[in-house]
Image (cartoon, rainbow, N blue to C red):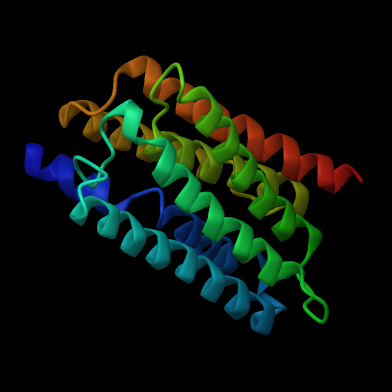
Length: 204
């Protein structure tokens, strides 16, 4: 079962979840499919934001700055947070530079992901917030919000998102990386932050 937990943890790693989420939204949201050039551009930014931090974190591990690639020790998590945030800020700049049009809902989603990461980074001084569940909560919050705002008819499929989050949470506990409290906190931060920012943008 440990092998299964490892596969789940790496396949649904928080660096990849934003890209998977965006590809899923692309496939189910007719409004987004009307803008293929924009979708390709945003997807390329999210791909870079997955690969570049992964390489940087691997380099930190090789140099001894991290005990493991999971940054299991709370005292070692600040630097990986900063690395990921750095690339997300660069990505956000690329999405908002002059001449680039990205729908406000998509920009709000990217901004919400940055906000949830920043909040988790602050809280890591006291508790080891689960990044895996932060990403899962954010992804489900995004699907929930886009479903409501764009009338996608996904109400019946949303429970699958909770099941996937539960599976990821099980994998993190099976690997001994997080406690239920850390997992729940990560999920709630991701879910609440994304829903609040994206839906607030929709109201405006």
